[in-house]
Length: 178
Image (cartoon, rainbow, N blue to C red; front, side):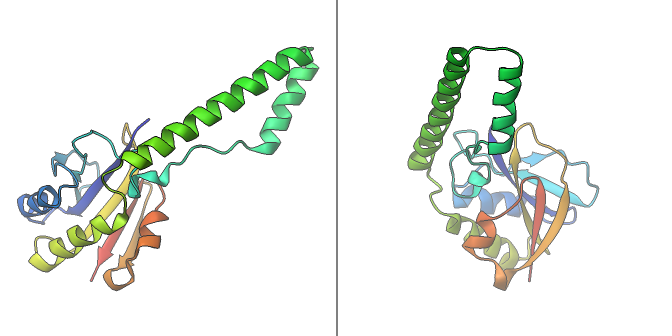
């Protein structure tokens, strides 16, 4: 699954002006997307590489850490099923190899990322707000295929900082208001 970032604006916003800000920022395309919410218009911020995997804001989805309790339960199930210790050892080696591959892939994406900092998003938010193109602007980070928006959070523009952006939950719309 790939990570995507979308910009949300109210339906009464000047979508062309917001899209132009996104394109000028070189963060993405600014293409209008379908949205089930009648009060929200979503704009794609897909970069030219077609996903935000590995970017600072798109890294909400980091490589999964193995849940020790679930891992131990799985080992116990295998032993109860009568699997040999050699087979269990091979399974452990494969699991470790896959985890290392995922971490290596994540690290390579981060190193190649053009959006190496979430600071690139601050000018977009501030420009849309200052030009009056939209009364508010929001960001949604999630995986493709896009899931429905699970909730809304409001952040004051003066409180918006790198930490808040990096701690965004997936599929939650974060509205930035004046």
